[in-house]
Image 1 (tube, rainbow, N blue to C red):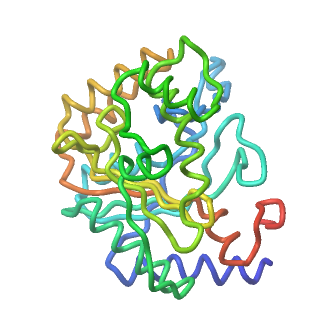
Image 2 (cartoon, helix red, strand yellow; image 1 turned 120 degrees about the horizontal axis):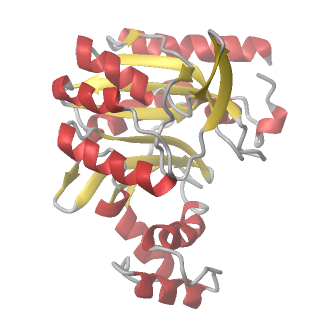
Image 3 (cartoon, rainbow, N blue to C red; image 1 turned 60 degrees about the vertical axis):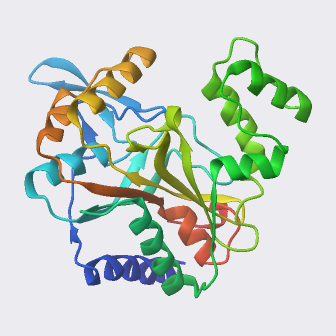
Amino acid sequence: MIELWDEFVYRLRGFFRRRGYLEVSTPILLRFPNLDPNIEPIPVELHLRGEKVRRWLQSSPEYSMKKLLSKHRRSIFQLTKVFRDGEVGKLHRPEFHMLEWYKVGEDYRYLIDEIKELLRELFGFEEYEEISVGEAFREHFGSELPENEEGMREILSGAGIHYEEEEDWETLFYRAFIEVERKLGKERPTFLKDYPKRLCALARVRKGKAERFELFFKGVELANGWTEETQMEEVKRRLEREAKKRGLPLDREFIEAHRTMPPCAGCSIGVDRLFMLWAGKSSLEDVEL
């Protein structure tokens, strides 16, 4: 297995180097947590010069890489370790490898095509599927995606999916979409794209849709990418709302970096899962890294 991992990582790095990306390395221990929706960061207490301080293990290298991007305005990639609380199971680990990259001057469509090329090199795939969130919802539930909580509760009740009355639209959406995602990518890699505006995270919104996508293969989520929102005030608004909602500190330096952020698109891939599939395994428990 160790020889396979060496070959796999060599091929990943070679792919991005041939396409003109620069490999970077950023800190794993951060002064502020990533404010990723639905992901719990892990705090760490240190003693520095006699003072107890709190730091955070990165759940993604996103913030650090974007700070570099704002200064150097070059397409970059990184293969690094990330950490997330409460994630354990067949497809989850609290510590795993992530591949993250940013392409200057392009949007999410470019990244989808780039990932197709990567998968073609690794697996020999020639056929792919692209489907919007709205289309996937209609195919599974036979209904348009509701815009309010009441409509979402009706969909969930009709499908026999448990929910709590006090849950907001986003929570109800993800309860429903767990059922949809399980059926994606069974026959060929599937890109789920064009998310509802309220699920934009840090993606650019155009014509009422978030320019973001996720990649699924054999029911496994592999990638998450989007056209980056580069307007500082909009990024500030979204992150302040998330920080307040979750009671977490906010990285103001990251927000300021958007003053000089070039137009770009970014993506992350769970490398352990991708390697698992490449090695012909069905569980991370069968992969020693």
